[in-house]
Length: 106
Image (cartoon, rainbow, N blue to C red):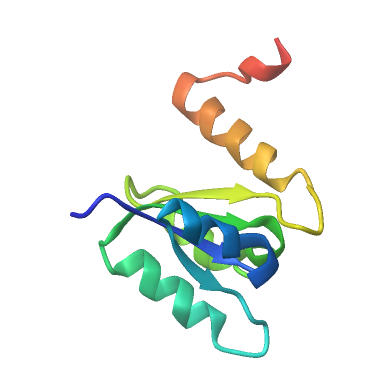
C-alpha cells in the first residue's frame, strides 16, 4: 500500500494542498461525488483522506462505511466556509472508542 494523502473538497478549500504534494480532488455536488469518494477509498493508494466538513455532509453514509477500517483514515477538516465542529466531533468519537472514555471533558 502506498502512503499517499488525498484531500477532497471544494476547489477553494483544497487547491493549496497540491503545493504540499498532496493529491487533490474537487467536490462538485452536480457531479457523481459519491463515485469519486468511493474510488479514493477503494484504491488502496491513500492511507489518509482529508475531506472538508462541507463535502462530508453529503457523504455521511459513505464515510460511516470506512470508520471501522484501519485504512484509509478519513479526517474531516474545515473549509473556506468555516468550521462546523463536525471534524472535532469525529475526532472525539474516535478517541473515545480508542481509550474507552471521553478524555476531552474530564
